[in-house]
Structures are given as C-alpha cells and as structure tokens.
Length: 330
Image 1 (tube, helix red, strand yellow):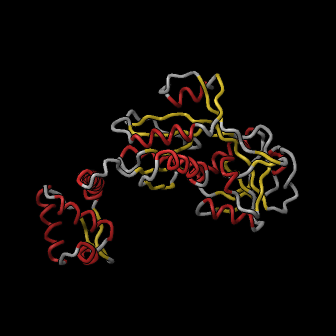
Image 2 (cartoon, rainbow, N blue to C red; image 1 turned 180 degrees about the horizontal axis):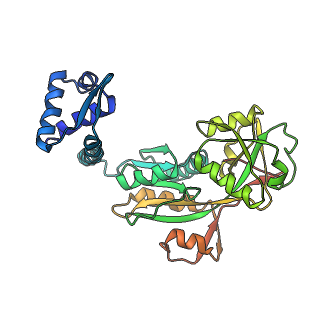
C-alpha cells in the first residue's frame, strides 16, 4: 500500500476536514478525497463519514487509523535513521519521557550530568502521565521513560524492561503563610478540615487511599489542569495538596511543605524497550540511579511489581529531602 495515501487519511482524521488536510499536505481537496476513497475500496470498508462540521473516522476507520499512525511513525523513524547515517550522525536523538514531578527536577539534572560526561547530544524531554509514557516506549516514540507506580499502577508488558529506582515520600504543600508551615511532621487527621486540590485521578486516588487508612475522608474541593495549576491554587491560599517529595528543588517560593507522619510512598521506575535500547538511555538511567541511596531487602510488593527483572535483592530508596521540619514538593 502507498504510505502517501495512509498519511492523507491520518491527516484527514486529525484535522477533521478534507480541505484542511489538503492545505496541510499541499494537495488539492479532490486529490485527498480520491486518496481516501481509493483506500476505502482497497480495504472494502467505509473509513470516514461526513458530519455537520466536516468528516470523522468511522469505527472501522478509527481502528485503521491507529495502525496506520504506528506504521507511519515507524517509517519516519527509519527515514530519519538513514538520514543520520548519511550525515555521519550515528547517535540518534535521545527521546526521554518523565512524569511532571520527575521532569521538574531530577531528570533534567541527570541529563546535565550526562552532557558533561559525554559531550553534546541531541535530546528531548516529554512530560506525561505514567500510563501514556509506558505506551510511548512500546510504540518507539520514547527511548526511556521515568514513571511511577502511583494509582492506577503500571502495566506488565514483556516488550519493556523496567528497573525499580526507589521510593518517593509524598508530602503536603501549603501556602507559605499557612499555620502548619515550618512545623514538624503532622498526621493526616490534623488536616481533615482543609480543602485539597488535585490535578489527576491517580493523585486523587493516592490521597484517598492514604487518608482512608487513618479514617479520614479528604475534601477535594478544587481540580487543576496540571501540576503548575495545582501549585498555583495552593500558593493563592485556596487549598493544600499532596505532592511527591522529588519536587523539593523546584518548589516555587510562595509555597512550602509539611512532612507527614508515616507518609504514603510511590515507586519510581525507569522503562526502556527490550529491543534495541538507546545506549545513551542506559547511561542516563545509571546516572539517575546515583540520586538514590542503595539499601538491602527489597519489599515483596516491589519485587512483584518489578518481576525480578534486575535479579538483585536490593532496593534504592529516594530520601525525601527535608529541612526545618518540611519536606518539599512534587
């Protein structure tokens, strides 16, 4: 099949219009329409349908679109790899994924150490939630992803290698002038009357699970679109929030954190493809692992989550950074 036709169909689905797709592809609208119609005849199914504002994929078209997009992405990577070889650039760019809290500090720091050690390399950092990042490693869009096992957890997939790096203690972030600011660890019960802010379902689930063990039901009164929005709600005094301790170095000046007694934790993992791993990805993983302190006796839960892929009976535990009774941010 002609990948040019596949690309036209995928573009039509993305922009929702034959005319807009034609403009983007520098084709005529009639040419794009013929390409889609020819693809439908070849496959024997209807791929698109018209609606009031343009066109959209049929159920069959949506199935084909997902497979076509993966094929086009792989074809583009093959072309780019050959272009790099032709230009003498044998090291392909390093595509890194990380959850927002990890992308906010420790991952860029590890990249900086890699650049100092190995010299200039092309790289990109793409923040996202753990589930989508896992899928992008499988699809080949990312060479390495730094993810967590916070709810809903990480899927088990034989196509990826997953290495447990350590445990991250969660902390509570409060406005700088909050009565609890600068005070010692508190129990979640002491915050029962507070309004909480959340930015995603997984983080909210972790808060509810932790509070439920103490017999508390937190009142999540505000929802933010992302982590910066969540911190903005805290900074302006509208709420407090549960966040990862790894964000300590990146905490904005108008908020601070309060440590919890027996805080909830989440595991931090590095995920890489089993086939053809990027050599610089493995080097980055080793550099980031030095952020964590190694101790013996890995908990059973983390052994099971890891699937014993490392074959080592040891655990790297990330120490939540504390000072003056606080630990700081996600």
